[in-house]
Image (tube, rainbow, N blue to C red; front, side):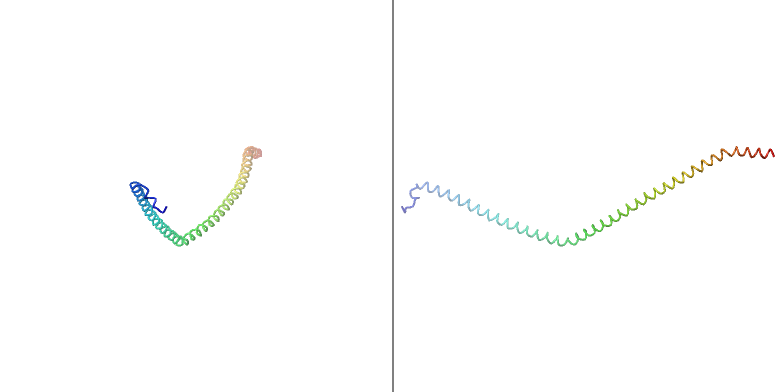
Amino acid sequence: MSEDPTRMLPSEDTKLILAQLQIVLSRLDTIESSQKTLDENQRLLEARQSALEEKVDRRLQETRPIWEAVLARQEALEVRQEAFEHQQRKFEDEIVREMKRMRRELMSVFNLLSETHADFREDTERAPQQFGRSHRCLSVA
């Protein structure tokens, strides 16, 4: 059985098999070529990605001092704002206390004026009677 098994096939079938085999081999060559192209594209993309990562790292190193300064300034502004708000609250509390004190003083002045007005009214109501008595006393004498 050392005979070639393809000798047993009709020659027409052998030609057909060989033609089909040639088509398969051609397609394999195309696939291999496409695979090489894909591999090259992947290598190029990886190289671009590495270059972009390096560029980003450089930019981060370049901008880090800027961001640190911005953050420090922001923190300083927040501290100043908190101090300002604290002073504002103290000022508002002082204004409220002063307004309450002034209200008490005004109420005291109002009460004093009301009493003085009442006394003045009583005096003016009594004045004609006293004037009449004084005038009669003078005319009798």
